[in-house]
Length: 284
Image (cartoon, rainbow, N blue to C red; front, top):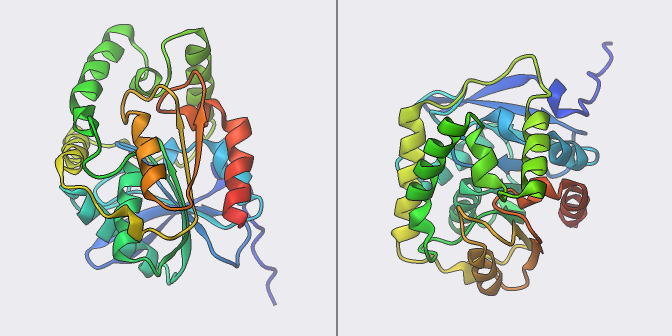
């Protein structure tokens, strides 16, 4: 009789695994105790397995089984990046079902939150609890401006020779710069089995999928009855902070948390406060 494999408790030690759904092979990582309802993480624009803050992942994984994954055509997942958020939600559903799961909690950030909304609306029986951070609703005010904002900051980041996330995710003041440097250092703690960065073509496809989402007719979010936690910074330049208020108004019974003097990456700047809050919410 062989001993069971030890539980992986740290995201930087979680091996990259693969599962096939149809003609797509998804790359994913998992950690935390087995059993119960797992928490599936939906990543942001251009994000790969290496773009999750380990302080948030590890905090939730202390008591829950956590799964992160690469969207189709991103990182180590095969296939072509979907042109719409709806298609990305279909891919997420295929991935979750390929793992043999019929009930999950969802933790999402930015574009991942848009995908999560579509998943919940199409497959409400699949999701028990929902965390939406740094995101907004279909057809939300000024969401379609994300393309211009992103391209301008890409140019600025090239001139300044900094990671574009420093400009897009954090305020351009002393506190924001300090938080950005700390966040980026945490993302680089993993040194082995790093993921493949997104290609420029895949990045542009995702970006324009967000713009289509922003220009589309609004979804009926009153259909979301799952307990929902919404969080953002008070100065989100990518997905305007007012859209978090919009989500809160339209999802009955949702809880809204806005962090001061922070931007799109407010949950990362305030990870010491937010991570245990999210873990407690997901505990239910």
